[in-house]
Amino acid sequence: MKLILISSICMFTGASFSRVLLVAGLAAESAYLGSRGLSMGRLPLLGPHDTLVFFSASIALMALATSFSPVLAGRRRFTAVAGLAAAIVALFALMFPVSSMPLPQILDTLWFEAHVVLAFFAYALFAVGAFLCIGFIRSRDRGLLDLQFKAALAGWSFFSASMITGGVWGYFAWGTYWLWTPKELWTSILWLFYALFLHLRLKGARFDGVVAWLGIAGFAVALFTYLGVSMLMKSSHSF
Amino acid sequence: MKRLWNTLISLDLCLWLLSLVCIVLAAGSFLLKGEFAAAINFMPLFTWLLDVPAVHSWWLWLAVVLLALLVVNTLLCSGETLRLRWSRAGLIPLLAPQLVHTGFLLFVAAHLMSALGASVQQFEVFEGALIRLPGGRPFGVVAIKADISPKGMPTGFSCELATDPRDPVLRTLISPNHPWFCDGYGVYIKQARRYPYPGALLEIHREPGAGMALAGAVIFVIGNVLVLRVRSRREEYESQFNAEKSGFCSKL
Picture 1 (cartoon, rainbow over the protein chains, first blue to last red):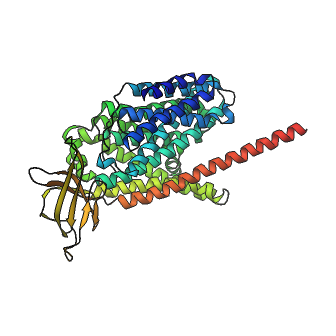
Picture 2 (picture 1 turned 120 degrees about the horizontal axis):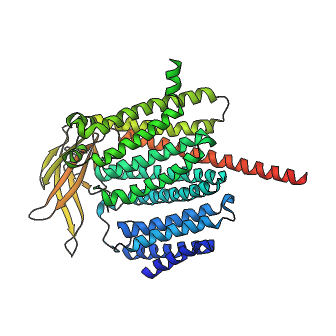
Picture 3 (picture 1 turned 90 degrees about the horizontal axis):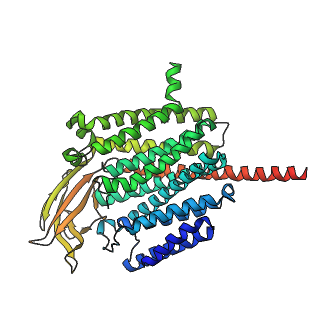
């Protein structure tokens, strides 16, 4: 099974040559996730291995959707960078053991699945936004920043929906929609950070440079919220 | 006075407050540990704030003050936008961001309500135990079930409750993700064991802000979807306009 994942990594790495390789890599990674899901009888969304693979696939999916924008026509670097990022995340997933433990009863609800899926779609859109910001800093093409704004807005919407479904799940599972833990605090920080980011755009073109750097910083905050908190801090969300 | 008003409705204040809240919460995430971290989720937030030494809670006090200012800024800014653009902008483009703001304000209000009146009580119970909700209503623990896999791993647990004193035959089954709600309280099963005799850990929660948070979530999602729709419509118009413009130019 891991061979499928390794083949997807190879295809993502070659995405600079053609978008077709990004599609093929995504298809292979989806097949890997699908086979894991079938063998366990649930969505593979538990533990660092499965979530990193899902994150990698989400980056590829969101980058693929974004790559059809007219702003990116003829720009192969975007799919190359996105493919490379998806490959690095999938490689990182290979470092963790594959766990097939049964789903704990507390996680056996659609609210949990929706919460996790929406969060990873949001993280992936924040990643896509960061790649577009790098492109803007290099080329000063404002079209890239406009596209990045759309990615950030869509990502923020997914993330808000993830927080809401997480709150509903928490209320049914723990009796409260909010717990004071490092993960929840960083989730709020990420949400407020992108709220700040979306408001900063209202300041106009004068702040384009700041917006671009904040778009990159936002992805760093997203990565810390997902990986940093789980690995470095004690939280109910740690894997 | 005019200067104060302009400051309170300004976008700059909003940006500074959001930045500061992020920094303060980040600091708090590293400071929240030990016995104080364990206690914060088991009492109303304001009780925790008053009980805990300021050296451990300063960040949360600061976050509360900053959020209060952000609420004022959001309220005034939304009000001013509605007043100035009421007749000039279309209804949906005008209302969509205000709905998102309303959702945010309701989230804060929900947290405030919970911070004042949330409660948690834990009970170690056995089959046959009689417990009372804080409001006085009694309920009984009829049966406790804990499933163990052949490898000895706990796979699931549930608890059967007799919840209606007038109808002792009526049963309610609670399990993880399926609590029993009554009189504003929720009864949750947290753990269960089979040996040496069936026992369970029950928690009775009161979360007064939950309804408000749900209302905020619904309004927020509606506003968010409308904002996305307004943005994509605007783009359609712009691309249509650009296409027509380029067609017109090529004809010339």
